[in-house]
Image (cartoon, rainbow, N blue to C red; front, side):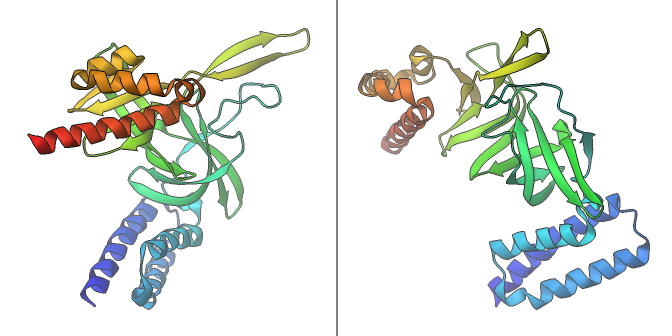
Length: 277
């Protein structure tokens, strides 16, 4: 029962944050607001014996749907208009040019199963919100996007981080490829544009230009080559060389898997070395 109490308190606390956010964004009158809060409270109490993480997600979705997504903090962005004409099959987005469901943390609030797509060229999040009066396609404000999860892949916003081994400034949205207590591997999914002129129209093609970074010993490092890996982890030069030699095919065919497996190996080496010392 004590665990249920703490879980119920946890849910009420975070739902209360949603209510405060609603009060800041809603244009409803005070009686409608009071009714909403009372109804929400009763809903939580009636569900107190079956609360879990799934229930918490359902509470958020239910609340946002009940008051209308247009009355939440997520309805705070710019009207989106596509400016780049592309050819069939080519696009500037992550995975697909279509909207797919994602969970987003925006301006301190969590939103679940939101239709969105991630623009890799502009480094922007586009959402398709179903309101009580129709659909609205918005470009979210970059400074309010904190993190999101799309198809079980986690992304986080990093701001003005400097790499120790290059002149790069890490800023924007980054995929968390691998995370341990010793190091984090970040991937900057990025596309660059090329403009094409024809007699009838202008169109663009977009191609990947991804970058990878380690966060290790409280510093960020750009991963650009095997040499850069060795400079980051000089104590494991032999192991890094061996891994590269044994996995040349994987290096050329699937760099994401290659660098993630190498990260696991490095983490194990660091952990073993730490435990010995």
